[in-house]
Image 1: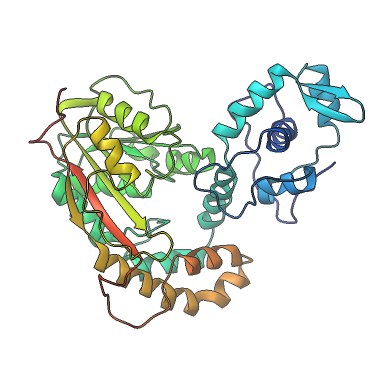
Image 2: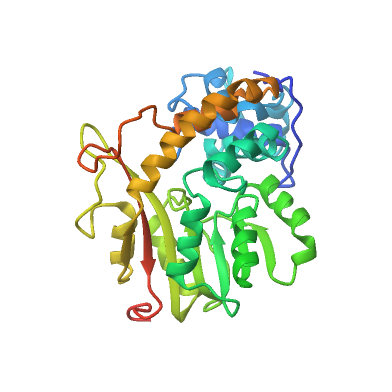
Length: 366
């Protein structure tokens, strides 16, 4: 089966497996989706459990390439084997495909598109300015007031070394550093976003640096940071307990952790704050790592921001569409609330919190 690129040409990026072409990487992922399908976290728009290669190809969105030569090259590398009329993964191919799928879940391809599109979208820049108070290419719910409160609550200063997990294109990292003078290092698994961050902040290299990295494996040295921040990114790890353990390792003994986390209610339940430490994946991960934390409720502010998102998205819809960026409009529209009703904590299905492992509490047992 051969895939075809979309009409809009997007930049190529060879990453992680330089010995494999993008077509070979995609075909390996598609093959393991057929033989051993799983539901990866934080999917965006991909239907799990495909029945054939055509359905599996939806995994790659607009980055789908032509696979017509990939099967023969993968057979020559011992990663596929011909069985009857079908190519099947070999043991080596299955192991490699599983690793590739972990490194590149469906949302990996979605976020590549997001950062490429937003980089040149005047409509999205205006959207961010009107919704968040400043264009930091936010994907989610952190406006300038919330980010400033994080700076205040976490007590970030010019003496700090900060690790920003899931930094995207680094605009929030840059804001944190510009406001406080802190040295900030950002990691994100989208190479296009890191490339944008590196290019934009080159004159500030003394206090800003970025690298491609995955929240499942934080490679920094022990005790390297005073503060680790995560702004709408702690949904990404496949093992949150392990990620928090790694965060604990890279912090100095009096270090702090600050996490913005939005909780979406399931089923018919209201989206109120969890009252028990064990009620969300994040709080369970803190408890499992013997971390005491404080909680700051931003649910009302978040509700009003989501209302604002709806109004602004509607006003900019035609501009998004003229740019051929209707997908960005759909994204922000889905994150909005179409209601003029005031916030009611007993009815709201969405809650937002800033979790802080405070410096004075420290890392219990560290």
